Amino acid sequence: MRVSMGRIFVIFRVLTALLTAPAAAASIEDRKQELRDKTTMTLKRLYEKQPQAQYAIEHAAGYAVFNNTGYKLGILASAHGRGMAVNNRTQQEVFMRMQEYQAGFGLGVKEYAAIFVFGNEEVWNQFVNAGWKFGGDATASADDGVNGDSLQGSLIVAPGIWLYQMTTKGLALELAVRGTNYYRDHDFD
Image (spheres, rainbow, N blue to C red):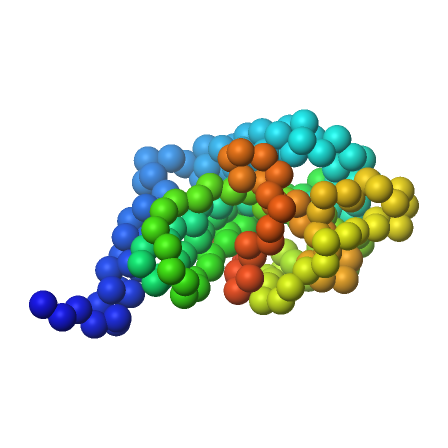
């Protein structure tokens, strides 16, 4: 039996949608609180692995935390996640989503967190209001302009934006956000 790539992609999309569908019974406020709790736990894990990150995040214009799951099935790969961005000055919370599709060979599931640090309010506003697509490489060193080593362990992903990435096993050394789209989750508006 011959199966077309189009059919495999459709099956893959349906499986991803089923696995990412929120529980219908949970209220919006319950889902927001769940994301707040995940954000707190993710930051706690980051601070244990990279203590300097706490200073960088607390003194930045804002930050965003996403908890993501990636799937690889043959030559198709997908990742999805939810998170929230916080403006440190105003304490505004913006609930967001992440989606990624890519081609690549493999089989498995990976859980990871992406923590963005925004150096100024302009890049934070652009990230939460216009969304953000990432499709390039990042450098392996970072300087926050305040305390040279406080962003150690992060990667510069755009001017004024740094990224920490952690797997469930600790701080990740690679950057796995190529081709990723971050956008406002209108389910929470």
